[in-house]
Image 1 (cartoon, rainbow, N blue to C red):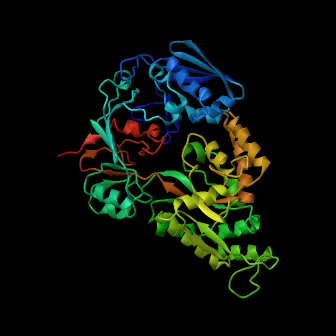
Image 2: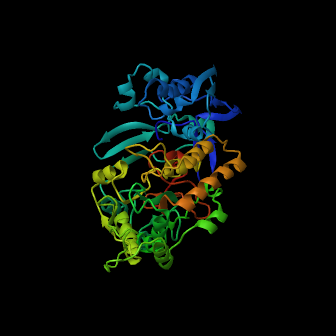
Image 3: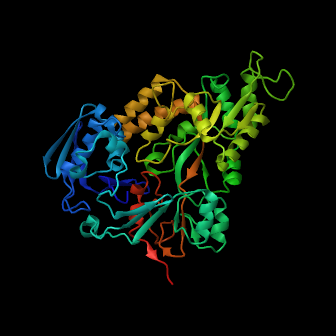
Length: 508
């Protein structure tokens, strides 16, 4: 995002698409999207940026299957270049939600430098000495850093009146959270996007460290941590058992004790507290079918469904008398998640479910999760913030069920009605809020009544600004810039780039 740019930015705090390399974009009919490329922009080698570059970039996905957005060409028919700055995209089966995301995800590359590259060079090449359009130029790199220097000829300065303030951005490799914390306290890191425990002590300790909010939860929300249960194994295939598990988890212990108040509890659906998502939360369904920590209810649900402690060991058995011995996993070293599943296991044990914790290395965790050999597991990989709640449900109800489920629906919930609703949502225009609400409510009802997985808390958009050298970081404070202050993959387009235009050197 510092060197390569996208057609639009997306501001999740205002829920607005911001024209960027594209001056505008709109659906001119239900199958045709028109983009007007901003005139007067140049690549950093001085060549003009035109519609030909945009067309070429998207058509890389048609030429090479390894390009991440190649899936577009399953429902994108053709791209017509109308003139030097106008394009029309013709769709055979427009998927409005997927397309809206590609507008701020696909980084546009210069055709004159990429048109002769092979598939290997495009998808896996080192791309040394890159030429882009962005606010920064590549300067150098080492094993522990990337160094970017300010682009004095950035198009946005002349055309939009924007200028990034730092002369250089040095992006450091995160060796560990402890090392990052030490560097932040010493003033060696100015902008941190790491999970760092003890934020309250940092904020109140006079270290000049500021998060987004001055008080708990300190952080904006970035994604939803979900407890997946393997529905191919009994008793997880029983929705009553799953609801008992949900009622046995004291999420407040995770929020307040494990995280020290820097995260917030999820609603029972898992929709993030962003305007784009939360406007579609069906409160009536939540009131009717939602769950909360209630161990007595959990015990009653188990008893009514025939789960009983028949051998006197303190744990219930299956209705047929067979034992229940389950494990919940997270990767070793992910200390916050490790403590979180300790809370989950204790809650389950207190209501009579024999649930133990296990901490495989990341590879082992991934193998169990993707391969479907786990019992229960925490995951949040595909629940991140976006401009549409379709991304969450597409991850939650991912289909089709395959031997390896690498991006959602790890518990292998098989419900064609839910899958069809996710597809229907994708085919619903984003501005048709009434139709979107209808589909969203149907999805939420399935989710809340069947509980194939259990949303627990919102992981934070970890951010700490050190005011030793810089001030005017994004924050909730009056008069401060209101941008999403995270530079994780594909998040710099959410506002961090614009925040770099409003930073100020700290007063001496």
